[in-house]
Amino acid sequence: MNIVKQLARILFGIVFIFSGFVKGVDPWGSAYKFTDYFNAMGLDWLLWAAFPLGVLLAFAEFAIGVAFVFNWRMRLFSWLGLLFMAFFTPLTLWIALKNPVTDCGCFGDALVISNWETFYKNLVFITLAIIVVVNRKWYADKVKSIVPGILSIGVFIVYFGIVYYSYSHLPILDFRPYKVGTNIPEAMSIPDDAPQEIYENIFYYKNKNTGDVKEFTEQNYPWQDTTNWEYHDMESNLVQEGYEPPIHDFTIESPEGDDIKDFFIYDENYVFMLVAYDLHKTSTKSQEEINTLAHWAMDKGYSFVCLTSTLQDEAMEFAEQNDAPYEFFNCDEITLKTMIRSNPGLIVMKDGTILDKWHYNDIPSPEEVEAEFEIE
Image (cartoon, one colour):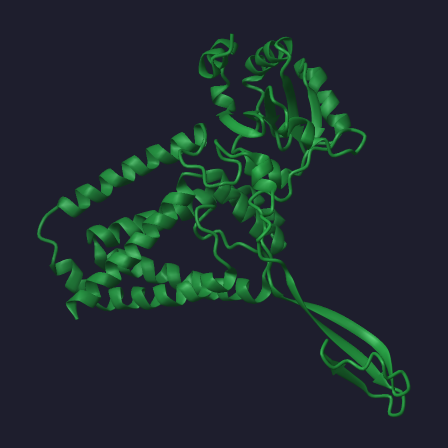
């Protein structure tokens, strides 16, 4: 029985540490997920709280997990763990039933599971939380020193440092499809042997004699019996999802409305993409460094463009106000937020492969780019 008690505490703690950490190293990703939820629930007035709530939720999970693993103050944290699960278990049931978002985001971008899988996972963990609460005094009696507290606080300090760095620069771990090293054309391709979508067709035919409408399958529908039956309706149900490539929604739209992404992702030279999902919210603190790098890149014959979801007229106003020498093209806002967690952020690629990414706080100088890529 003691083994079960310890396993319940440690397993609960490890999963909570993992969940809190992968969301903590990507604070803007957590904020975007809260934004999705608020939009789906019609809570637009709460959008301002998306970022602080994302950071707070990640830390709450991480802190509970650390306390469980180190067996620190279990009389308190056992109840916090149970309250956490008591809130999120019915919430994830509602999400599974209503499907307001396709990905709950419980493990950030590190591990994507379905809404129903999330709910079933929570059923297991609320059971573990109950076991821990029932035995909270037993855990507390095992602690004979201040070591668990010192270790927990030390881990919290390191965690806050990582979260702050990931906020001020870029996430220290990138789980998204546009991470450094990704070849975009390959990530967009579908293997020949990839699973295909399978649909089940249901046919409805009306009996000419009785007027009744009957349901048929593809195997027995009376398409040849035109004397007794006439077609009424049909519905198709997805029974097996097909393969979806990691990158499946990437387009770059010119002012004329053409998709010109191939011009950039198959370019054998260096391509610099400034990603600013919303120019009204973009930071201009590094605009001088960006303009300097853009002039250098274009003098070298390299492409330097800005991808944004902002309308072209407004993009031109931004260019005039900030002396931006590069062209602006349109891209989906969600795609841009996925590409880089910075507004703006800089991506450099060659032959479709992402070579490096920079937050606006870290825009490199031409000399730094030349040194990194050995450009003469």
